Image (tube, protein in one colour):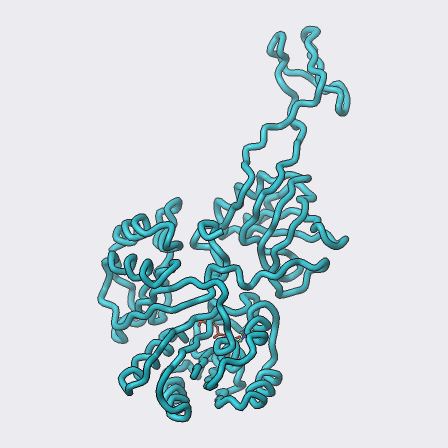
Length: 403
Ligand code: ATP
């Protein structure tokens, strides 16, 4: 059977994966076999999310569905952050995996509570929605999920008496571990900014999360870390780092959808107040140009975005929100030839030259020196992928190391 849970946490505490990990422990103690712990990230653009729009699913090979359902509900009732207005837990138990179509809808589009309940009734699932029951959406999506591409996350949880206190870690050990296991693990640290990025700072129970391509690699990486003693550790199979949220662009951007879109840079990128960089983009399909943003927290990624020029042919990946594409990464396919914006030096006397007219080259004011052709600007960029730094990466975004 499959047990799905979602929407149990608030910014002040808890984490749905922690509840899932506790449920797995409880079921194992009761003699059930927990065959898989699964963590799925759903549409990153939903407004109801607390942090990363996560939902969990446990695959249990033994035990009675009614009993497992009762244990899951008890745990939710004991630990969910019911006082938070945005916390609306949902628990679902099914004996057969439902149609994955609903998972894709929750991952790439939007769902309503009403249609979720209709589906749950249609497949005769056991379910319970608390408060407005919105968590049923993620819980049904989690049990319906399929992972044609999957990664793993080793999550270590803190002991209860430490919740809300600063986390004790030896940062150096995270750098050692990241170096020793790269490229099979990623986003443990940011080597450029020299920061640890896999340790949260909030009041939630997570001590750290190591992401990588197999259970063996994430476990090997965690083995090297020096930290306070975790109370519980679990390896989750996930859709993180797979680009599963991206859909092919079909000609018109839709609010809240995430795209992989091919086309041409249509204006010179400009840095706006607040530090975000923006440019206009012409997709290959459809007439409509749209604006692309690289936000301030994407830090040095913006330097590469600023180097783009009109005519560059690129593939962009990102979410369309509030009328602009929020850039996660881009691939530069063809670098456009661009004329030098300042005049070159005279090849005869070394003096500064002036333009002889558009496309006619340059002439020297001091001597008879001439340059007949327009001088191309050297493009300080190579073809290939460019991505945001680890600290700014969305959970679902595939790191370039996996491309
Ligand atoms: P955390 O990552 O800390 O577990 P969270 O960011 O996952 O928190 P939730 O508390 O799970 O946030 O809130 C997300 C809510 O949005 C859930 O109720 C979930 O069922 C719902 N939801 C998820 N995907 C969609 C979707 N595509 N359309 C509508 N609602 C969705």
